[in-house]
Each structure stands twice: as C-alpha cells, then as structure tokens.
Amino acid sequence: MRPTPVVTVVRYLLLDRVTYLVLPWAWAAFGFVLDVVVLRLTPAGHTDHRWVGGLAAVFSVVLVLGVQSVARALPFALALGVSRRIYFLGVTSLALALAVCFGLVVAVGQTLERATGGWGINMAYFRVPYLLDGPWYLSWITATTTFVLLFVYGMWYGLIYRRAGLPGTAIFGAAQLGALALAAIIATWVHGWTDIGHFFTTITAPGVTAALAAVVALMLAGGFATIRRLTV
Image (cartoon, rainbow, N blue to C red; front, side, top):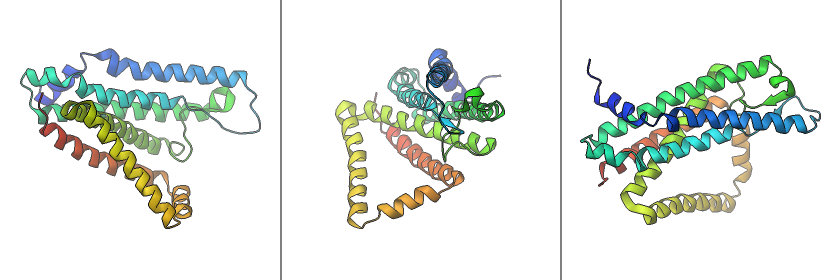
C-alpha cells in the first residue's frame, strides 16, 4: 500500500533519525544523570522536593529541531516536488507524534519519581512547579502541548529565515521583544503588576495548557501563512 504524501514527508524527515529520535532523549538522559550527581554532592536541606532544571534541556533541543526541520530539510523536499502544504502538514504531524511520546515519557517518569521518593534523593526531575506537578494524565497533556509549542515556534523561525534571511529573522525577533516591552510599559503605567502576579499564582495547570494550545494554534496559522509565501 502506497503511503500518503504526509506520511512520505514524515519518513523523509526521519531519515535523520539521530536528530529527531536520539538527540532529545540523549539530552534528557544527560540532564538526568547530571542532576543526580549534583544532588548527591550537595546537602539535601529541609525540603520534600529538590527541584532541578535538567528537563529544560530537552525543550531547548525541541526548539532547535523545529528550526532545522525547515531551515535545512525544506529546500530539498520542495525540489522533489513536495507541495508547501503537504510539507507543513508532514512536519506538524511529526511534531505531534514526537510530542505525544515525549509527554508519555514525562508522565511515566513522574509516576516512577513519586513511587521512588524522587529516585531516593527527593529529586523532582520530571516535575515542574505549577506546570508538571499534577496527575499523570494532566502532565502528559501539558508536556505534549509544550513540546508542540516549542517545535512550531522554532519551525516558524526557520520559515522566516527561509523567507527573509537573517535580517528578516532579526526583525521578527525584535518585533516580539518590542511587543513584550510595550506590554511591560503598559502594565507599569496602569499599575497592573499586582494583578498579573495574582493571575499567575491562581491559574491552574489546565488553564495553562489551554493557553498554550491557543498559542500553538496562532503559531500554526502564522507558520502556514509564511510557508505559502516561501520561495526557495
């Protein structure tokens, strides 16, 4: 049975199996071992959870994967006759599949982490305060959504680079920083930082996940609009 065009794009991307299937897990394993060593060498103190940041390395790798999925692999795919729409669907399908697997690993890791008392040293590697510290199914959904968000964000940057080069990418990044700076100025002007802080301390994990999903939808729309105008 002949695979669909979207599946063909996914298989094309997975020719680079080391990048997509090995590199994120290698970084996760490295971060885990590094955090264990650090906690073994430092006093535990008086806390039930010793929060670490090794899992953030995996999310950083995911961002880079999104960039290279279009910055490096897209031109050859278009040269082979793959349409921009099919390629975009293939990349996002791969991102979603990888995200589901990653979210499952986080959920299983949290279950084992709780069952072993934080791997015997109260380490919270697979848990993040307020985000990934609830029931396993909720952590699965949140981790999956975050994975897709970072992959799509990186992919959009890669598309901007392909569309407008380095100057355009710099302008794209500067525009986002400018928008954040403007929002901070407005918040200061209206004395709204207290309300913002209250919002972030009261929002629940499902609320965060829903907000992330909305951002993913916006980025997918922006990425698709960019790839449609792309000339390689």
